[in-house]
Image (cartoon, rainbow, N blue to C red; front, side, top):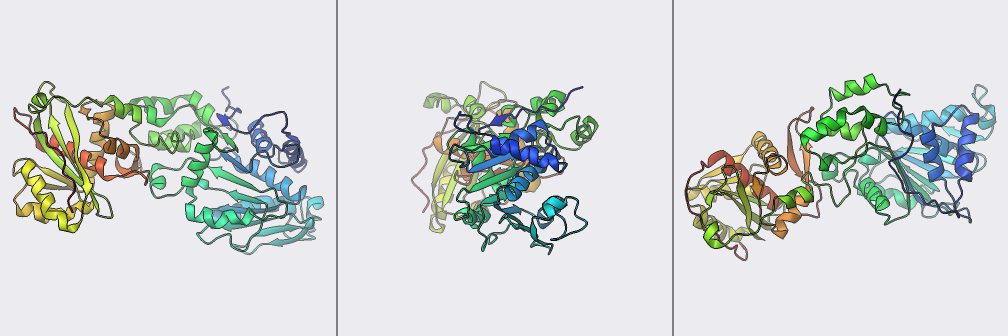
Length: 511
């Protein structure tokens, strides 16, 4: 019978001889006394987090675990929290994104200590004898011990954590953790009484859509720094071995059906999680969602989370041809996009290549500053190149739609993409790069950087339809969006024919 792997895909905890696992081993033994027996993989997590140096300081002040849902990561945390409170007298602040999640964690730990001090019905009188107070008020749940140890449970907000001073900060559901929440919470451990702070991150991979909103970015950053060994982090990760970015849709569909990947991604496979349960999820999730939610597959790193990987994009790069050759290309459509601040504009063009029936060359021909006073200059720039012949494509959600009346006044061919058409444009451009290889570009640095920040967000529950979204807000979104629009317009509205085009240099700005 195939069982889930007990060996983590990654474990970045230092293993030098100077470090000891005595606290981790003691914690596992202590929890077992009260009926909480660790799986081998959970024992690995506990020992990795609680590893100490010769001066009894934590080997890593930051710890984390990521494993697919329902495998038992909360069991590992309970072992650690029980030991830290009862044996080491540490103060813990346990946070979750939702009130109900924080309360569930409280109820699991209260199982060991009882409903109140001097609780005659307590399951473990020895532990209940340590209790000075159990606070059951919704939203203010807490357990306080006579040895000074305690644990308090709260739901996160941008102001949560104020008034707390603790030794250990737990960030459950870290895939939803936002920067402002982290900023509010981290100071709680800066002056903890034990003077040996620890932050624990727990969760599953953030979705592309959530990352684009800023949710989960701290979790992603901790993982990236751990795997790149930029920071000393006790990061323990269980998941299938692969990256969605490296796979075509066909390869990903095959990957998620492989039972070996099910076992590698779920240590509780054929223990607490049945193969039939996973089969049911597989029939309902999209391949991307299944890879994230059940196989616990993360984006490569903060530097490599684009839906179009660098290597695939670079494969489609070609040298800029001589002008005599470029002049034989057939100009297709133009695409325009602006940043949200409306102070930068990008213009791209798609062109057919005469010696290839399918190939389209996309070029970023202008990426310049812009202000409202530059509108006449921008319209003139497009008129010189598109006239009333070549369509100009603009995403309906883009600030560039403000240009539509000015372009139509010149009777230019303007087409504004609706929501479903933008989905078609996104998926069509992705397929042209990743599968059909019918797109070429010239390695323009601003466009390359823009592609690096591409993410995608599902527009239906199955994940069968999706659209491009900005993933990395440090990278401009408008250059690649202008290219996506130009490509869509060239495919959709321009019939291949023998024609001429002029290769134009971008101006210095439209403002």
